[in-house]
Image (cartoon, rainbow, N blue to C red; front, side, top):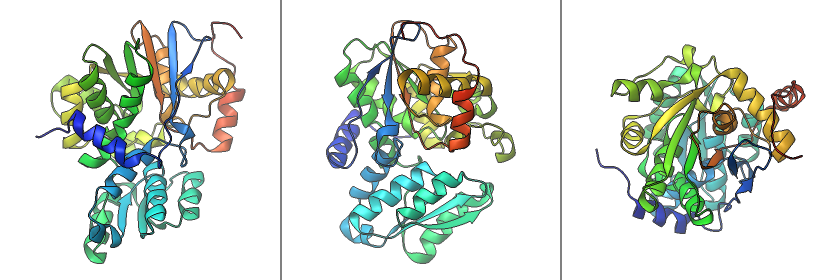
Length: 322
């Protein structure tokens, strides 16, 4: 299977310029070791997904783009595609799983997307049928070369902004972000480790890499995790990228995820949804290795009640100056 290249990611960086925010790196003197955050919650839609959605849409020929776009998403990719489609003045339809967080559904509606709710197991096939029936372009959340290339711009920025980086920690669900980031980082700095992070309750990539083949978990199994943005496993395309370019995948518990949300909010003043807190959770749990680490906070579209509980929970031991 042909993988995307560093040149593909660099081309994406040109397409998304002035549409996606170049997010800063935030130092964390309160954390053990040397930790920096890459806060993708600062994007216009609150998550990194705007990068891949914008690149995929802008890479389309104008005639195909004008037909409109459709996707399936629990929220962040749907918001990102709706945002990009509105900027290009094209229609956007999002197939959403029953039970998706209302905060994300409301955001997609505000951006003008048509929502089609279905059972979690039916969302991909429903999106494919809608694209065929309506003549729209399917823009998958991660199983797409242009989407992967767009997400990879996160890695470009990390390497350009922090010469001393030793490890990049990135959340893993469908694998588009990890695939793109690993492509960019390894293309520019082969010596830097890129490590994926999954919840223990949705660890398809970790299991697949251990077995040397892609594995699939049922929605009933992966929906046990609070990290709704990573309840979907990798595709053949993203698994091939991660198998070739990641230095490994570590897992974190549900308690570690929610604790990390609280720590990030209290100490870094950064809002992270559960999926966005995975990389920091791995660092706080001591599973990230040594040296200078960058944890990608992939998004901040969190239910307010869940965030309040995470912030109010008794804090784990936090080291470093106030």
